[in-house]
Length: 441
Image 1 (cartoon, rainbow, N blue to C red):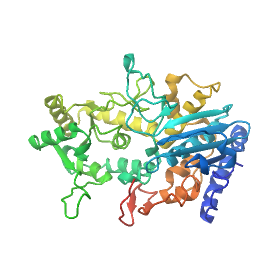
Image 2: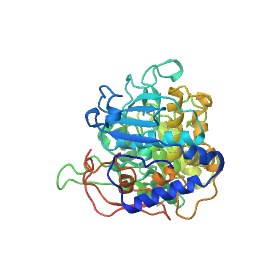
Image 3: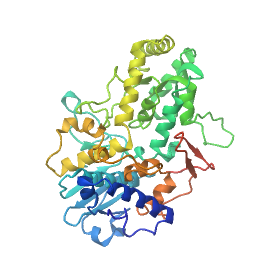
Image 4: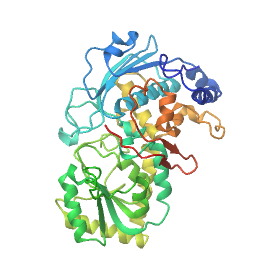
């Protein structure tokens, strides 16, 4: 059977061993090719720096820079070594996705080869010499990049605790459920900090001039001083409150766009200069303006942006097919492509491509290939009620505390800080905090 995710980590709790055993036992019941590939052993180890790495992994790394994750896979030993450090949970979540990607490759029957890559965990999109990155600036002809490595999905597809997203998959279900209800206000809305980009401040000014079309909730003053006025809107509350949603540029790529697209609300999107994996025009089936969202620019052409807001709101009220069709396409795109499973499979293809593994689809088809149902799941019978079919589904349904129990070496107790305790509802896909604490990065 597949070994536990961490060989030398703390002993997991009884319910953790039971959950992992249920996943692996059900996976092995698929029979045929799947059973053969699932029985392949993979050992993975993670540390925050080379000095504290496992002895078998230390010799494989030199100096590892900050805000990066170094990955080495030995095909001979079936050993996956990872060393990295970054803010919040970036290194651990990305390491989890890398491990899941290698396990997915084993199930798909790919001929694994040695891999040695460095992943840039920065979200700004600056040029770097790393092999892979979350985001980068288009600098070449036709919008292609000359530097920064290959684009991969970011850590937020696991969870993003800094903005109260304890599980991406659970929050996506909550967004989709909230989007089925009529919005309380027939306006296009945006909430966030105004200090991170001048275009956000411009949107706030335009919203004051057109309160019948736009609403902005500024959260810049939150938690700065005792007694400061603070207006804050919850993640799901945004969907319930507004008939259409706005996304504005910030300091890096947008982490909230995947969730906004799955909500079933129209999206006014002011595209950022940095590109991410699902927006790179090189890949067939990428997110496209006009097809999946309404492109706007409140800073350079506020009149056109206001007119676009009015057209979308009127289209919703009159059930215009253009608006309804765009919302449907965006929702379908997010459901297929912007999920933890699709993100893991896209990362798998990039890692295998780096190692020149044979039998891969053309690189331009990676995004579409990652969005399809994997063949090993198609061969499996329907899972018993409440039993995930593999580790990816286990990660999708896990709260941060459960992830720390399932993969203890990725989320060791020594690294854990005080944080809220989360409850994830399987029925409604909702998430709630059981106590309020500040999460510091």
